[in-house]
Image (cartoon, rainbow, N blue to C red; front, top):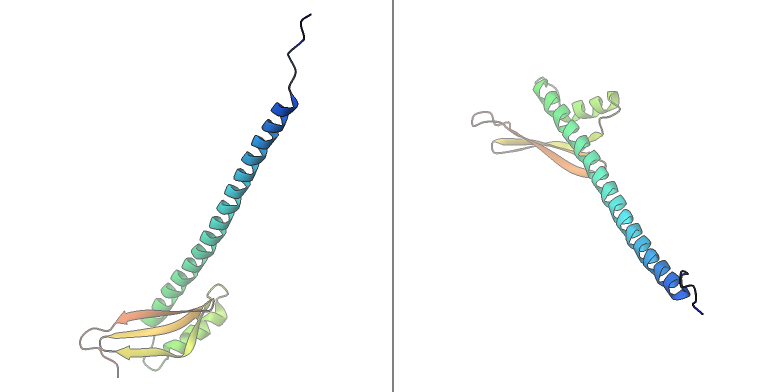
Amino acid sequence: MKLNQKGVTLVELIVSFALVAVAIVYFYQTLYTVKNLYSKSQKETNEFVDVNYAFRIIDALYDNLKEDENICDKINDYGKKDSYFKAKANESCLSNSNDFQYVSFKINGKDYKLYRYLGINQNVS
């Protein structure tokens, strides 16, 4: 008498479940890593956009600065008008050194400096 050999054994079933479980765990770890990398890159991109925007705004404020105005006050005043502008000038934000002048400010808790070249004969004391 010949037996029918068309069925799946219990060992084959357990091995296939184990292989599928390993594949699922690997896939989950990959997705988790990708999600973390995406979140980190999204945060860094947003910080870069904020800083770039602040640099452009402060540079424009510098260009329109009158002699009797303080750039630190202009930065803080502009921040009150523009809801996206996240920079806040520090207390003593303006500093001069040789042929350079810089404005220091904070964005999201990090300190930044915008340097401007004054030229050879434009030193401000």
